[in-house]
Amino acid sequence: MNTTFKLLSVAALAVALSACIRISDSDDDGLNSGAAAEADAAAEAGIDGDAAPADAFLARLAQYCGQAFEGRIVANTPAPAADAPPDPFEGKALVMHVRGCDDPTAELRVPFHVGDNHSRTWILTRTESGLRLKHDHRLEDGSDDPVTMYGGDTATPGTAQRQEFPVDQHSIDLFNARDGLSRSITNVWAMEIEPGQRFVYELARPQDELNPEGRLFQVEFDLTKPVDLPPTPWGY
Image 1 (cartoon, rainbow, N blue to C red):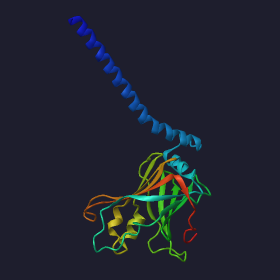
Image 2 (image 1 turned 90 degrees about the vertical axis):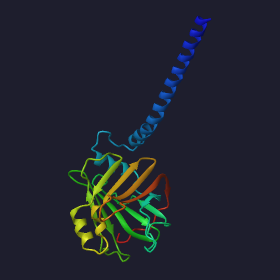
Image 3 (image 1 turned 180 degrees about the vertical axis):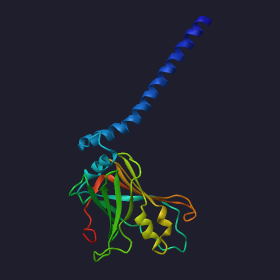
Image 4 (image 1 turned 135 degrees about the vertical axis):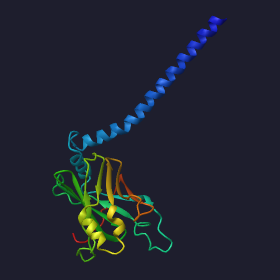
């Protein structure tokens, strides 16, 4: 009786261990499938897996040249005060258009349309050490907005998926010269791209005396569904 019981216990333990192994393998497969799909998408777009992160990031975005995508706000904190003006992004159609692709390994221009406002264009430029992001703001007549060409350069290599742009000195001086914009002197912008899935634009500020609650603003664009092309951005 004891021998039979021991044999049954060993058999049950073996089955349980086998099930755990299969579950573990299945979990690993699930974790790896996303990376594999991303690698396949990059290979299909002709992106060099050994390229510098800045070049790989530009190449990932350049594969969408001539296409537009709709976005949605996924983070917008802190909430505006009750007496604050309406948020310029909430409730508006948000569309990015990968448009300026004359030399995509050196520069890309991506207009960001907010409803009927066509004033914003992101300019990504390859530098000797990484990437530069500038925000080209125009008035409806095409002339420069008083606050334009602000942004920053990458301070680290980043990755093919994410690049971060701490505010540069030119932008700090620009913000300090304008009433109500001094809170922006600690801005860090970021962009993320997962080919065949999504593109994210981000603005973040750390918690400090100027920004007691910090700041996080993110718009996520669906790269699986191209939309109709928006109008030409102002000034272009």
